Amino acid sequence: MTDNFYLTGESVSDGKPYPYRSCGLDGIFLLNGYEMHEHDGEKHVVIKDIDGLHVAIGRHLVLSRKGLAPKELRFLRKTLDLSQAELAEKLGNTSQSVARWEKGEVDIPGPAEKFLRAYFLASNMADDSELETLRTLIVEGLAELDAIDARERPVQFKLTNHWAETDSKAA
Image 1 (spheres, rainbow, N blue to C red):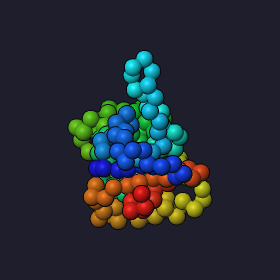
Image 2: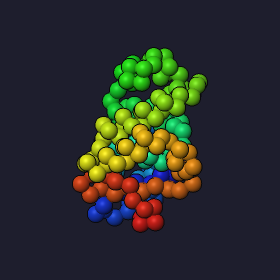
Image 3: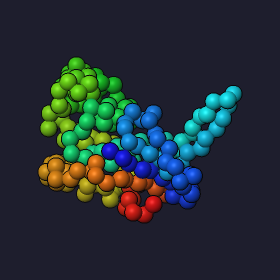
Image 4: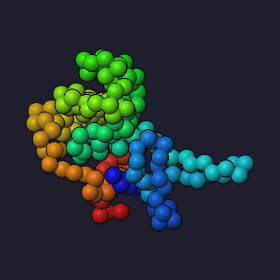
């Protein structure tokens, strides 16, 4: 997965994407929306609207990925600010089950994954226009997503009043 994120109104930094590894996912790159600072000879990165960025990454994961990988599941749980026990309670499972899913020991069951996707969307809706997307996910399930392999295309995000996915050719 190689996904690029950028903020509207800012130029792309040096043409060299910043590898955003601290989110815990592989292949996430920021094209802008961050600042490099140096303090006592060490470089530090400050990311603008990090919560909004995490929601945008999460939306991308739940809407355009076939089967959530263990790291993606952990990312979604942390973005929702839930412990493994809290997520397990919402999914009707045990915290041991969630831990095993996040370690990749077993796959998350389909109904639990579907609910997690819907719960993430419902928890992070920007406005009522997203109700149709949520309805589609709940009613039609993951069948359409199963036909998509998003790993083949980069994804880019803009910040207007919130982070949003854009056409990858628009960068």
